[in-house]
Image (tube, rainbow, N blue to C red; front, side, top):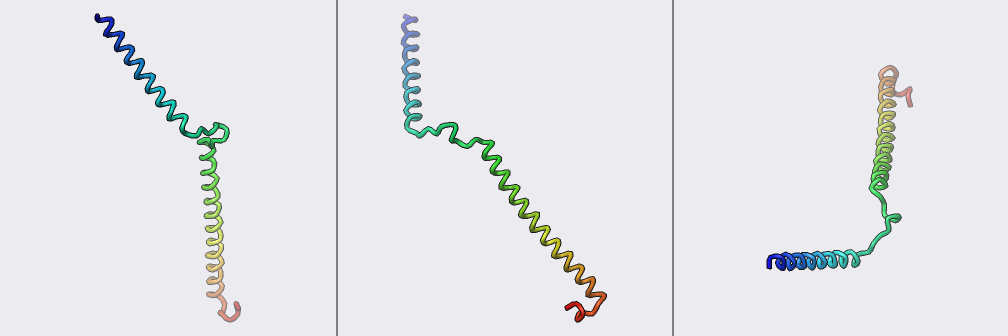
Length: 90
């Protein structure tokens, strides 16, 4: 009798596993499967992110360079204005 209880438990577990596997397969079939070749990989996303970050850094560096050049020219003009009359610079 004890072995029939084990047999019933084994059959019950097998039925539960089959039901779970069937439900998992049904969920998998309802979604669209994208082939691995057309999916962007994590490295591709990281590369795109780094490319955008580099472009932002280049823009920032250019803006800082232009700002620095403007400030240097302004400082040089002030230095010249201190030595010369304002009318001679225009």
